[in-house]
Length: 195
Image 1 (cartoon, rainbow, N blue to C red):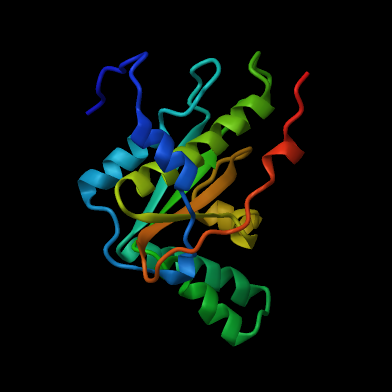
Image 2 (spheres, rainbow, N blue to C red; image 1 turned 90 degrees about the vertical axis):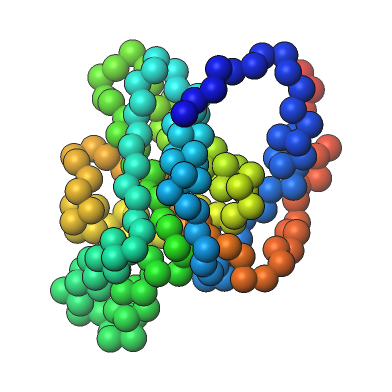
């Protein structure tokens, strides 16, 4: 599926996408989500993130169809075992149903390697950003979240994370219910220093 990269080839549409890309709320998504072909393209784009050492220090968990319900059941079961109130349990049971597809990006950085763990974790973050950009390029909307369930040991275990693995993000992908509004952006002269 991969194409041979074209270097020194201007891509003004790509720059326009980067300058206008906007996340959409997972709570404000609807069908359709990505097709099988589009999902494969999104994941392949994610896997083209910078990766010092070519370690591929990340992997994907794709939640779609009934898999979203099973993920919600895990969240509900964990909270029920902790004595959480019924309303919150049901909210969490429906969490993964907010978008047609959710991609879990799992950071699997290697300790005791010449490539620092921090660089490997940054690579997983770049994977998440590539996924968002690819979804936007396909006319979809994405939302990168982690929230409590990305850090909870019991949830991580039930989702099959191995020792040392961490959730870099859950990327919710679908179609925006409403037009996306721009949000405040930094004043560039306040965040740039020339050395």
